[in-house]
Amino acid sequence: MKKLIAFDLDGTLAESKQRIGAPMAALLKDLLAVARVAVISGGDWPQFETQVVDALPSGTRRDHLFIMPTTGTKLYRFDQDTWTKVYADVFAPEERDHILEALDKAVSDAGSADERTWGERVEDRGSQITFSGLGQQAPLDAKKAWDPDFAKRKAMQVTLRKALPDLSVNIGGSTSLDITHKDIDKAYAMRRLAEESGIATEDMLFLGDAIYPGGNDDAVRAAGMDTIAVRDVEDTMTAVRAIIACLK
Image 1: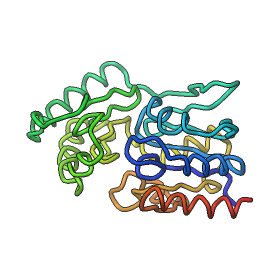
Image 2: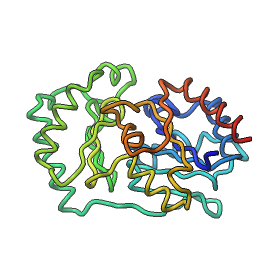
Image 3: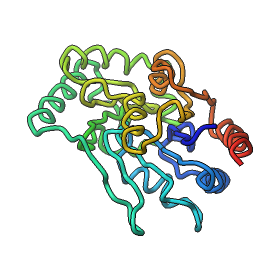
Image 4: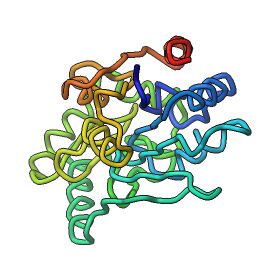
């Protein structure tokens, strides 16, 4: 029996940057009563707080929950009635400046500098710098239509990997590229989670909507850990109901 169930966020627990729905929140409450739970994604703490933490019902075992922003380069735990940052692997100032210069050039080379955007395209999350093709506040329909075949981001990824050979550049979300220290992916997050929780990776199960070659959840499967590929939020809810039934 698994002791810890880990989830991707956008496309798995909720639509992109949307608050988890009441039915999902209720299921997470039930799951947290019988297992530890982790949520791992590229967003920073404020996004997790809005999408997940603030949506959980009263009585939820928050002390059983691991929140892992920026692909696991940060960890938050609930301790003594407050959420506390356990660690954060942040960029040095000179690394940050180099990344921002490379991003500016990659956007210009891609011919995307003059595209319509909603909010800032580049977000410094401390331990991760994220490029969002249409901006941080883009509407969901526009985001889904912008790069459905990943072609735009794959081209930028090639450019950025050449410019930033000592860093990781990965496709994430529906319009984003995430830049982190080398070898940072969701498999790294699961291994770091094992260190912090004392639960071995073989006692964990990961659910994500991008567990396929090239998907940003696939590193977990490729590392030999147990995974469930889901298609959408409804599929996740079906899986969670089955997991709760098995763990009770």
